[in-house]
Length: 93
Image (cartoon, rainbow, N blue to C red; front, side, top):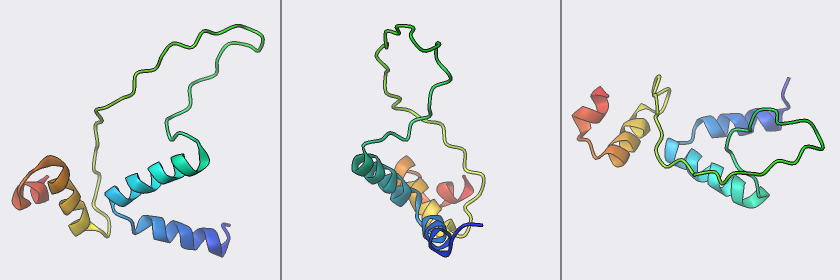
């Protein structure tokens, strides 16, 4: 079972908005010098020379919202901000 400190941290993260979560990810990447990108599958065996091809950064994403959770109003606000939709359209989305 997770420690009380970890459990509290998880609860705080669950309360963040989508925009705050994106900001948190960027801050963690900067602070620790890491990337949140998915890891590549297993490569060739050790000793084999591999020429790394330049990786093009993805600029468009598909987001599937399964449910707003406890932060429905914040989700609607974020959808409106990102898409430029009106209140009714964002709510119906």
